Length: 446
Image (cartoon, rainbow, N blue to C red; front, side, top):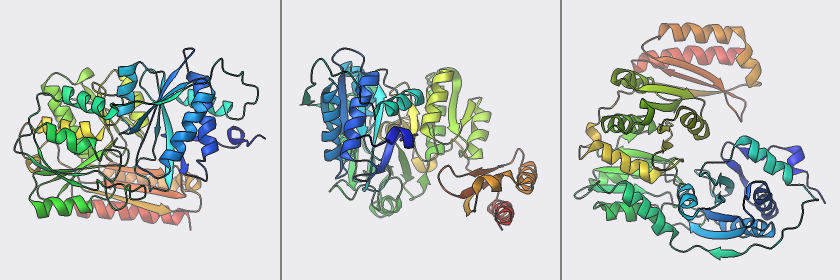
């Protein structure tokens, strides 16, 4: 009997299909997704498909179901085990695979899980291809495969990923560096400490004991408090916090001060430009990127392109422009010269490469402006955004900060909220401008 998935909703979001495991993301849906993906993008007669996952307790169930669906459509499945997301595009190229699937919900709590696909070109599937996969979910007239696929373990995948990192950073000597790593009880819990040790660092590891339910639980890049405390107490030179699937990173300097994606990208951009490795001479960021980043890049003569929030859009812009570096304030950093995906471990190593032995606490790539972000609940976000008084107030505050800061007022994509963000030269000016705008938003919903 048809379940009507494709007819009733758009399953794929900006990062694959994601939802509560066992509710939205069931074993049956995973099986159907596997079969539909192979039929849509399988390519050769016997398509070869990699499946990797993070440490969530639902991962094994979804891995089995997804593999069964792939095999039922004639695909040969290679199980890569627990690996960071960026290992998928790297392994596609290494093994000449047709497709890869990553089972993860990134920084979400353990109860959630997700499935995202990478094509034979090592990029995430396009919106059109994902919609075509959805359209196949309820198909009942698919031709039976000429053969049933096989399911096998692909041994040595973590070593393949580590070797790629080691080759990319072969000139990086971390001898004498004392670093703390928060692995979020997720997919980086083995790979991250290993590569830092191979490069010579002394490593203290936090959140490296996954039990299926503690992924992102008070740890990782969305909960950096533990890492901040550990760096301060342990006298470490720096700390890095990854998320559950390992595609983002945030840093902490020896004083315990958080270093976000904006500063990490600024460091990388200046470093790569100095080494003549900043392809196209530009960098792609999102609308959330701090004004101080733009000022620093302008002073350095580096072009900046801005997209809406989401690493998917950053990647699209990088491909369109032929540039190599981009990312988000949240710590998604993409270096296309290494892999066409955010890679938290590689980004941490790129940061240390950019510092060239200097102290992270003495970084000077940019000066962050004070920022205030307020999420204002409203009855109807679209109606609130359409109010002329909000448009007038936003234009007035933006004009007052022109050349010195910026204002961003936008609706949430998933909730009845209007997000108000202000950046200004001082904390006081930032707070005052933000409060004025928040009051206008609240008035539109009164």
